[in-house]
Length: 157
Image (cartoon, helix red, strand yellow):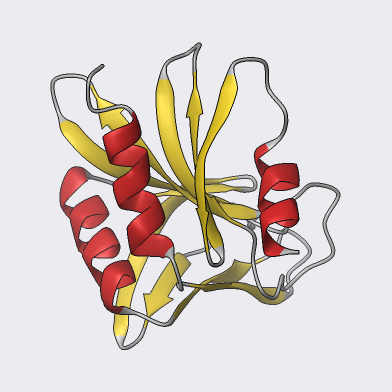
C-alpha cells in the first residue's frame, strides 16, 4: 500500500526510475532534468487540498553537493505567516510562498536532514490563507535510507 502511494505521489514522469521504496519514503531518479530525490506523503494532512502534499529531499549535484528540503503544503500559507518544521524537540523556520516551503539556506538543509535521520516523525505547520492553523505530519521510517539512496542514485552525475 505504501509503495503504491509513493509511486502515485512521485508520478509517472517520462524518464523517471524508481530507486527504491523504504518504509514510508521512496527514492526516485529523473532523466531530464537530471535529479534524484527522496519523497513521502504525509501520514496526516492538516488541510483539505486540491493537490497532493509531500515532503522531499532533492539531491543537488552542482558545485554544492547536498540534499535540499522541499515541502508542498496541504494548503497555501497565509502571506507572511511563519512556516515551522518540527522534528522531535528541534524547530526550523522555513521559507515559503503559496503552498511551497523550503530551507532558507544550506546550513538549515543540513540541520533538518540530520534531525530527520534521528527522528520518528516531523510536522510542518503554519497558518493557511483562510486564517486557520494547520500541520502536515510525516513518518520518518525509511527517510534516511531513501535520502541516501537518492544521493547514491545520482552520485555519478
